[in-house]
Amino acid sequence: MAEPPIEKQKGIRHLFAAGGYSWQGFLRLLKEEAFRHELIGFGIGLGIFALVGASGLEFMIFVILMFALFAAEALNTAVEEIIDRVSPERSVEGKHAKDLGSFATFCLICCNVIYAVYVVFF
Image (cartoon, rainbow, N blue to C red; front, side):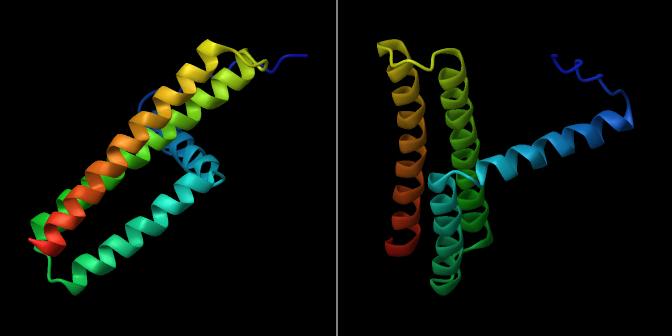
């Protein structure tokens, strides 16, 4: 028997519900090894920025770039989950969807690395 649809919350309850959904997404994402590696990179990056005396603005830009990376990783994981649910058999289209999500994440990793190298060495 199918589960009943989730009732939409309104007002302040909507904010709490949205926060709960986001927390659940974070917990799900923690199961992804790539995300755990990105969290480790975030911590290492913050430590290196502190060691080299990065400015507040440089820290803020790094944090924003990392949150963009986390968002891309979450969306990539969502695409993979949907593909695996809708099309469990291997397909060219499913592979392309997964590869595109991976490329988006890779682009943001490159952005973070380029920015970190700039802050640390220039």
